[in-house]
Length: 433
Image 1 (tube, rainbow, N blue to C red):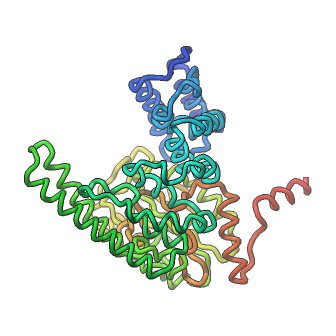
Image 2 (image 1 turned 45 degrees about the horizontal axis):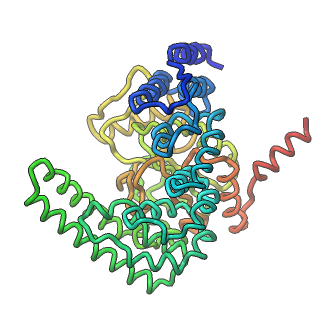
Image 3 (image 1 turned 30 degrees about the horizontal axis):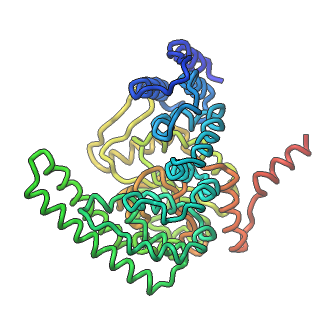
C-alpha cells in the first residue's frame, strides 16, 4: 500500500467531524462531507482508484454517527456518493433503501435500486404497485430506470409498456426530457412488434415537436428571468429529436449492426478507421474523457478486464472525441491543445502515464454519441463478433463476473474460445494452492 496515500487518508479521517446524534445530517453537513471525500479524490491524482482503502476510510469517517434508519430517501440520495463507494457502509444503506420500499417512498426506493443495478430488488418493490400508481409527472423517471432491464424482464410487461403512449406529457419541452427519449428503445428491448413501435415513435416525435414549439413560444413571452430556461429547453429538445432519429432513439440498436463510428486516431497506431476492421472479435467500447472522474476511476476495472481476456478474440477500445485539452492527473493538470495533432500526442502521453493497457481512439463523432444513446459517461457498449450490438449502457466498473459472463456468452455463440468464468477460475486457483 502506498504510505503517502495511507497518511493522507488518516489525516482526512482525523479532521472530519463525527456526528453522534441520530438526526439525519443537514444539507450543509452533507455538502461538507462530500467536499472532504472529493478533496481526497483530487489529492490522489493518477493514483486514485475506487478500490483504494484510503478512500474507503475517508468515506466511512464521513458517515460515522449517521444512522441510515433516520434518513429519508431524499437524504439517502444526497449522500449516495459517500455510502455507495464504501464496502463497509453500502450494505447498511442498501438495506435501508429496501426497508423504505415497503412504505410510501416505494417509488423513490425502487428507482434508486434500479440506478445501482439492483434490478431484481427494484422490480420486487415496484411490481405490486404497477404503472397505475406512478404519477404521470414521474413516469419518465420510471421509463429511464427501466432502460437497464433485460429483455427477459421487459417482455412480460410488453402490453403495459405500449399503453404508456397514452400518458405522454402534453407540456413544453422540459416535460419530456427525463425518460421519454428512451421510450422507443425500451419498446424495442421488450420485443414490441416493429410496426407498432414505428407508430409510437412517430407519435412521440410529434408530441416532442409540439413541446419544443411551446418552449420557443414561452421564450418570447415569459418574464426575462425565465427566458433562458425556455430557450435551453428548446435547444435540448432539438438534440433529443436528433437522437430519436438515430438507432438508439428508434429502438434499433441492440441486435442491429453497430452504428458507423469513424476512428480518426488510436494510441496503438493500428490501421483502424471503423469497427469493420475489428469484425470477428468481441469489441468492448468504453466511451470516456480525461475530464470524467468516474471514467478515470474505473481504469483499474478496465485494466482487469483487458488482462482477463489477454490472448482471446476480445478488444477493449476506449473511445473519446476531441475535447481541446487533456486533463493529466499529475502536476500538469489541464493542458490545452494547440490543434488536434497536439491533442493526439498528449493523449498518447496520458495513456502511458496512466498505465492504459488498452487502445484509446479519437472518433469523428462526439463522445456523447447519439447513435448509442449516450447521455453520460462512462458508457460501455459491447459488439458481438458478427458486428451487431449485443449490450449497451453498461458501466466499466460493473462486477467482473457480470462482464465475463456477457463476453464469454458472445464468444461461445460465435464458436470462439473463451476463458473460464470468474467463479470457475477462482475455484481452480483455490484447488491449486
